[in-house]
Amino acid sequence: MNGADASPVDRADRVIPGACFGYTRIPDEDAFVASHGRGSRIFTTAETELVDYTLGSGPLLVGHAHPRVTRAIAEQAAKGTHFYAMNEPAISLAELIVESVPRVEAVKFCADGSQATFFAMRLARAATGRETVMKFAGAYHGHHDYALPSFPGVPEDRGAVGADSLGIPAGATEKIVVAGFNDLVSAQDMARAHRGDLAAIIVEPVQRSLPPAPGFLQGLRELADETGALLIFDEVVTGFRLSRGGAQERYGVHADLVALGKAVGGGTAVGAVAASRELIEYLVPGSPGASQRSFMSGTLNGNPLGAAAGLALLRELDEARGREAIAAHVAEVSAGLRDLAQSKSIALDLVGPDVFFDVVFAPREPVVDLASYLSSDRAASTRFGAEMLHRGIYVVPGAKFYVSSAHTSADAERFLAAADAALDVVASVHDVAQ
Image (tube, rainbow, N blue to C red; front, side, top):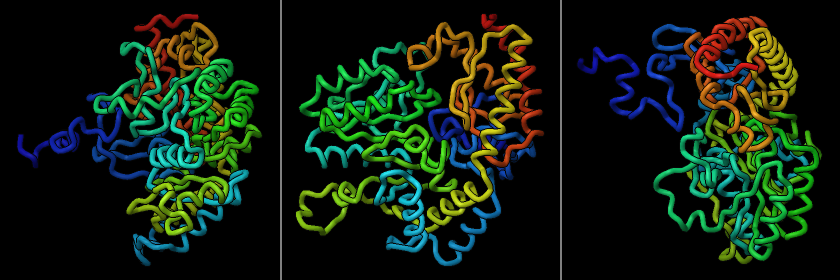
């Protein structure tokens, strides 16, 4: 078969091995090449229409090609797509972040959420003069070498995505220690054992889809104060999604550093580190003692196109009560899915806050951390996602379900019709009976 006769997926695989961009790969029988998106739908080059519960891995909170976002991008593109200079959209986006996120006084931009967590860790080390960072088992803080080693002692056959990666040098992990999410005693023991060199505690306030136990985040705040470490909230997912002020506003706990991504770029490549002005000034070149500054730079940092897109999305989310619409859709789908599982005597639970969710099958205990998450039937969850994809619902099998303000009751009906059939397949293959 020559290039002209190859399918779009085969063409992609020849030059982009695996025909995928990241750590997830769509099963061959349902692989597709996206053509365009509109609202809650994504369309393929084969003219197939899918209801999208992946949403670009989360940033499209108002759906695909929202008129306000696309207009903002087009207007900025006509003025210029990049300057490597201070620009008005970046200033306005920074002002909106400072206005919205509790305790934040200043912002530095980068290109995505992974860079935001990387630079937040670097800044914490610079500010404290220490090197060790504590994180939590099962967390995902991006693709950099300090982020990936989060699954100590987890066998490869347990399905822990990101449990390991070839190419990470031992030196990158020597100063990373891992405690148990929602296990404050574990965190206290680990932090106190490294008290003299603990630069930061980094946590997803909602870890993947696992909400924090009552008192856990406040306990981390107190632990950071006790040890002299800085508390980093990785709000790449939760920022502007849980509430206008993110997890800090939702849970009433403040962090010293906040890593942002996804929503702040409106579907373009934007990340940010937000903190007090005192901390952010460690990143300012040419200031007194500049030789002791912490380096943060990048070609596309503060890109005006991305800033314009992020501003448009965040303003639309506020003005159109987008978070309320997202929560209403999650509630509708969740209730229907639970009813279906109950009617089929399938042991199913939904984990997550009110604006996104994960589906777990046959949990052996309440799902509150990595161990209890992995004690559920992860193969059944992945199979359920694959069956949903096969029936026209775009999801990443085994991963969380994202919802936008563009999703409708008609989308919920289509989701639940697909879930009805998908659950039957799961029950026929896996032991998920109540």
